[in-house]
Length: 227
Length: 227
DNA sequence: ACCTGAACACCGTTCAAGT
DNA sequence: ACCTGAACACCGTTCAAGT
Image (cartoon, rainbow over all chains, first blue to last red):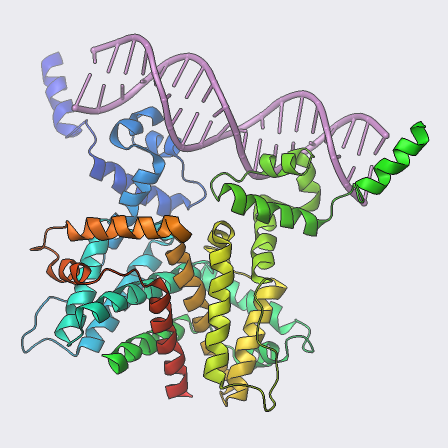
């Protein structure tokens, strides 16, 4: 009887030992559930039913864990298949699609995205993005030197834009926040900020999508001109 | 004799009471001296020879103080004078100059710049930047709606790029770090990252200035095309 | 190999109290 | 009006010890 219970238990909690990947996924989930500011190693440990010092067997530090969380998020980006053949679209459109995908994934993980700042991403999923951008550019005829220049500009644009965008919040919260800010700007002294106030008064939409596209057209258009 | 000493003392430490601006300046200095991670309210208080709870008489929270530190940094940006007359250069060049100035100031204050992430800047010095960009665009013939779209894209590009750039460190440290990363990328499996590895092998310079300019040309060129 | 208890040296913030 | 002492409820991390 006792033997049987034990067997059941073993089958139930499939692997009592935690893998690094499992911990990273739990960290990511916790980030998005409770927000950036609420995260702590102790909180993560308790979510995993262990004590916080155990985490230091798996990771050297919180920063190291964060590096992996960032890469895990980037891993959610689905890039267009790497085909040069007939079906492959225009390179400019391929790049634009990748940028939109990066934005989609980062907006879906706003809390974890904040980890990207002040961090040089070096994980496989960042490298995958770099490989895609550089490959696309080279097949479009870019020299090595030029492709090397472009890819960071491109990725920094996407990441940088979304990072600032996220500060407004996401979803309904963002819309509310943006409306508040519009109110605030409209109330600013017009003699000091004539253009800012005038322009804000004239526009009522929020247009974060359109702005991303505007910058993106500029960046990619610039690549095309200098190719 | 005791009276005299007292007078001296009063003349020396001009204003024993601290103003918000003084505290903000001290916080900024501390940030850049000891780095982002080392900052604490207790540390700031001890730098000002007060105890940390006193800071909460001046500021509602650490976040509120940070808002002011961010705006203080942005206040260091010197924009071209607002002249429409004969001396005024091409609007594209005026915008480019402003972007370079923002980058210069943020690179000079890397620790404080990290505060910009996840924050919507709403202080007077951010508004000043917005006013400048919008004014320049409107005088160049942009509609209200278009100027409103462009200015955030423009500012986000500058801020976003520098934010990521700063992750490499600054000065000699950055050069060292970049060389390390180049080594690391060159050592990556070429069958997995053929383009990335090839391109990195072909290029030896670090080119963060040139990349910023490349993106900037694209962004501003895009504005010009759609004006 | 993986996890824990106990401890160290910190945090941000509140609040009653001082002057 | 401005500042402090004492306290609360936390942190990340280390390290000897357990299994």
